[in-house]
Length: 54
Image (tube, rainbow, N blue to C red; front, side):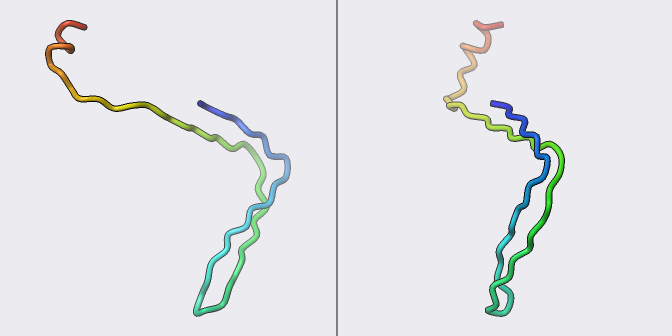
């Protein structure tokens, strides 16, 4: 699944802790965001199936 999201104006926050103090960085984001999701199932390789397919 490939998804294109157009952001006119979006804010993103990153929260982290430094020396026991909670901090937050707020960023203003412009532009496109690409979200790529790949799913599937793996199986065992079989050389016979490879030669049959060729």
